[in-house]
Image (cartoon, rainbow, N blue to C red; front, side, top):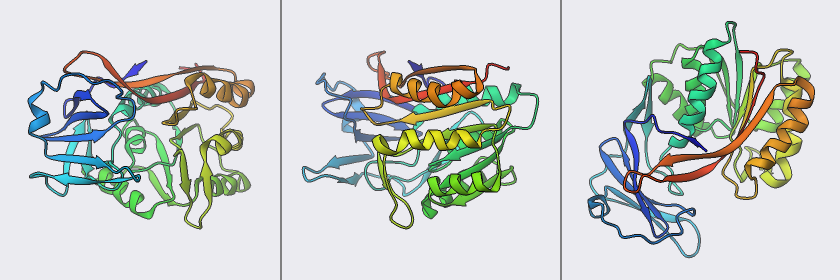
Length: 289
C-alpha cells in the first residue's frame, strides 16, 4: 500500500462505526467512510469536540452540522496551500491520501532533466495540478465543473503558483481528449481521477465501469514519443489494483515499455497505528529516470 504519511496539517485521528474523525488544520471533522465497517470504542476526545459532522441520510446524500467552523480555511502540504470549504456530499475540496501520488510523480518530474508536459483530467480542485507545477511541469488542468476550476485557481494563488505554467480548461474530459488528438497535441504524462459516475457540461454520462477502458485507450494516443508516467486513481470498489494494472499494461506498456505498479492508497490512523484504505492507484513509469 502507498501511504500518505507526510502530512502535518491533516490526520485521521480515529475511525469507528462507519465514520472517521479527522483533523484539518485546527478543526475536527467527522465524516462517513464506507470502508469503516468496524465498531471500536471511541476513546478519542475529538469525537465530542468536533467542529463539523456530516450526517448521512437513509434516502441518500446527507447534510453538514457545524460547530464553530469557519466557512473557509487553509491547510498546507509541504510547499502547497489548499483552500478548504465543506460542501455537498461530505467533501472538503481535498483528498489527502493523494499526497502519496503527488510525491511520486513530483520526484519523477524533478529528475526528468527536460520540460515535462502534464495533462490532469477530472482535475477537481487541483491538488495534482499544483504538485506537478511545483515540481516544474507545464500542466493542462481539465474539469467539467467551472466552480471546481475556479477553486483550483484559488489553490494556485494560495500556493504562490498563480504565475506557474498552468492551462485551465473547463470541458468534458472525453471531448477535450478527442479534440487534442485531432489537433495533434501530445503530453509526457497523464493523470486521471475519474468519478464513479458523472455528467459533463452538456449532460454527457460517465459510468466508470463502462467508460474507463475506452478512455485509457483514447488517452494513450496523446502520449509523446518519450512519455514519463501515467497515473489512474480509483475510488470505485470494482476497480481493484489488479484491474488497473491490466488496463494500463494492455494500453500503455504494450506501446511504450516501462513498468506498471498498482496498489491501494491509504492514510495512517493515529489512535490505532493502522492504515485506513482510501481507494487505489495504477502507476505506469517509463523507468527512464
